[in-house]
Length: 185
Length: 214
Image 1: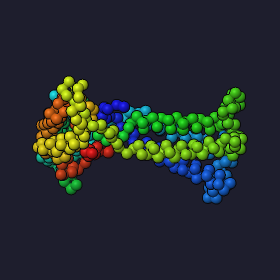
Image 2: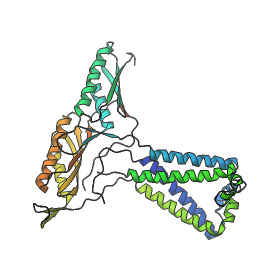
Image 3: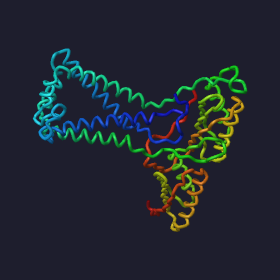
Image 4: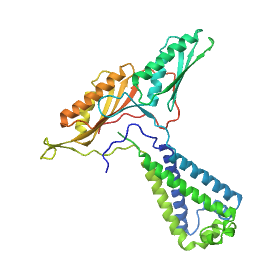
């Protein structure tokens, strides 16, 4: 058995599709068991499901409803395969490399929140929004100040400082935009 | 550090996806009339004029027990897969302290939880650290430290991180007498005020939760 602890930065564990698959399997298995046990005990299908089972049982395999069902199954299979095979992006990044062996990681969510807060502290910025997607860090600062160019420069400096302080091991491409709000907003 | 097994989930998704595609192809083969073009496949592929009722009647002898077994298996696998989504962590064996050459007599054993609690308390004394949780794994001769710390955004983050990493490395070396193999630190940045908007796209999962020492 491996004693190595889980890595700090790892690909998504695909918890959501796995949970949905688990629920689907549990529901399908429980329904099948209810139908089959009733058949074994009573000698006939449950009364509430009898008409539906008779309708499905009478469908030819080359009929449209059955081919639609096959299409739905194929789409579900493809979705499951894509969810498994696409690696996905890690939700954390390595930062602040130091002399002590090992790594330091911070959640991208925390990094985005830190940048937002720093930009919102800039004089003239009304509010800010940060989007971190892969290596791209996009910041939208909103201002009511007429001289938005000055605010943009200050916001850009704040973003660069807040990112540089954390020394991300994978360099981020930052883009800062400014949006001027009307005073009535 | 609590985690969910990604490889296990991906394996389950691949198996379920392949089975769903095979089932779809089996039904689709009837619609395409493959048995007419390829008579040898009649043993495994259905005819287009077959119905579920006629297929069930043709395979009555073995279909019912197999269907019951498949139902039980599906329900159990579903339940197992759901339970597997609860984050867990591997149990850490007791740290066995030996004399200096590492091969001599056993001097004593140390419950990692005791050391983890002490390290967490010590890490929380670093300025700017709001909360800390430490996990020790590996062997006493090559300990592996994983810690989760919550640092105030108003604090000097880089300094606090470096201080915590050095403190953990020094403390573990002092207690166990061996240098740490690795100190992995997961940093959470927190502040009392909330920003107007911080959006994260293209990444899965909720914000990491702080570890709890056992």
